[in-house]
Length: 294
Picture (cartoon, rainbow, N blue to C red):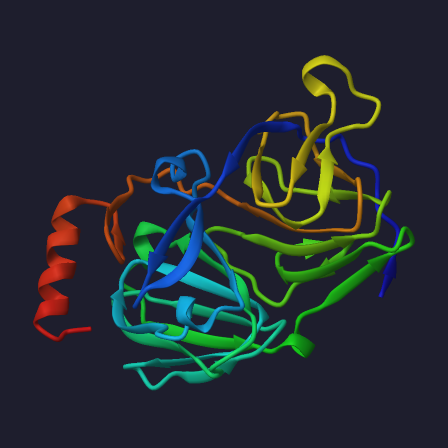
């Protein structure tokens, strides 16, 4: 689809964050970009991991059976394949360009293992909180293969994969009433500009995974001047009440995630893979898991 970018009053970069190298599962190497100390600032998002390696010993052991309760996981694969299985009958292979959207709800136990023994494995996993009223909903799992996710191409040659929310008037593959997430994978050729509208009040950030961009109105000055964000950096977008979106200009061929969501403004109580609103609910989650009630 061809669409012209519409001019917006741009948010600015409030802060730049570089991720922390770590490992998870059975030793899978990754970078934790959105960490626990940012959960209130970036509510409703709880975590963002970026993974990418062509060394099998850094990903081959995968993520054996593990539980979740109280939130959703959104796994987006750039390269490689992963097989998902869960204890509610969900199973599927996540291939390049595809998304796995899993709702843990009241409890799910799942595993994710590579369907390859060599080559590159790269992608992202985002944790999206659930409203308190929905934390004990029925678990769910949905595969979104590459061809089912809408893609917008602007007159400037920018392509936007619309995983959730909308872009340039095109609705994405997923919607969520409580958090109203926007999840865009944006590819900009060198020198191109994207003006992307964002809902007022949404917390938002970008994560650049290739190249480098500048964020903000090119005509701005002082605190409103564009600020650079380069590969491996997350830029937290300001929450200025008069901003209507974000302007992004690429310094070189660049790829980034643009993610936004409606804050829940609820207490966050987390114990590993369980995210609830109170300590008592966490204790119950652990007891339920240990008793096999997931």
